Image (cartoon, rainbow, N blue to C red):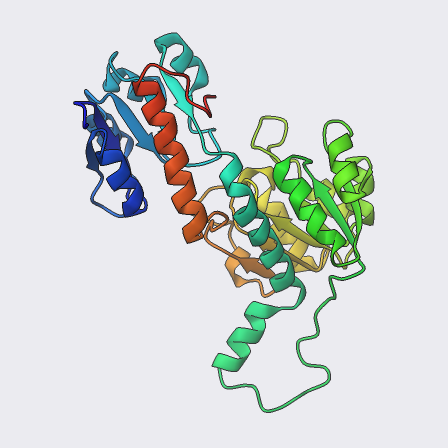
Length: 320
């Protein structure tokens, strides 16, 4: 039976999820296909018992104050949670949650899609055909780089990094990895070898980033690190934009310091660093790592389960 819980959803998510939430709550959804301004968010969360929000919604002390003391939870429809003020939530006894496990498969697939697209120059090839330039087989046309048999360097040995590396085994790749400490599970499942970050940068043909955004990971790849990479190497980022100094990456791509890159995330989304979109040796996607029907539906159901648990006075399964 539906209760009188009052829930606000800050942006449209799959309709099936909204309907499932409406079986238990009175639900209002942002009708516009855009992120709310902070002022709009503060207005809309007033008096709500719970808020299902996006990773792009900045939920700070002011927003929590606007929501009111009856608000039990802000449930992120995202795996990241750097949009939350964790200290403010603790002071106000407001629960926060995210959707971690269900995003792994689609994010891993996105990293591999970027890797292959960059290595085999898929975007350039697509444009070449659409522009009517394809006149027949040319032995020297749009030569790319093979992925199979190369060295894959994974930075970040968590669920996603581990899964990326496991798939690299299917392409006969040599797996090396770096994290704050060696990871026995990573090595058991992937056959990977732990190395220092600098050693990984110097040896890998493909470097795939899978770290959370923390003060110590911000700009972990900049001019110095790019200078350590092979000139034939590719950088893949499907984690968080600010872990790469985007301006330095543009210079590295312009000068041929590295061969190419594949990016799904950006330092100052939705903006990109000047010159990035003009480069032919970078493949760009608009933050689509979890953008499959299966994953977005699963994310919604996890967020709803977290939200309803908090409203019932229980600890959400993915409480932060």
